[in-house]
Length: 85
Image (cartoon, rainbow, N blue to C red; front, side, top):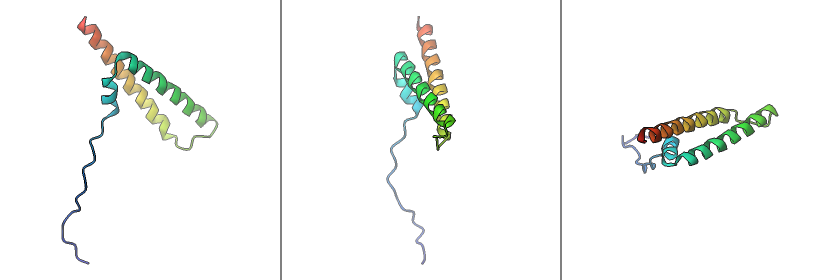
């Protein structure tokens, strides 16, 4: 069967908003709450791994990086507020 050389056109997926962009929209208290939630989730995942109930261990890495991302944005926000004073 010969192809016509035409590509199928698909609808463009909506642009994904990065996690960092979502965190930057929050205030300092919101980012701190997000960090606390992520730390609780990470602890829970660590306990699941220890009891061999965690099937996808890559989620540990993802949550660890999410925590680091949130802490970085929190530090930037705190630095901005001190620079404004």
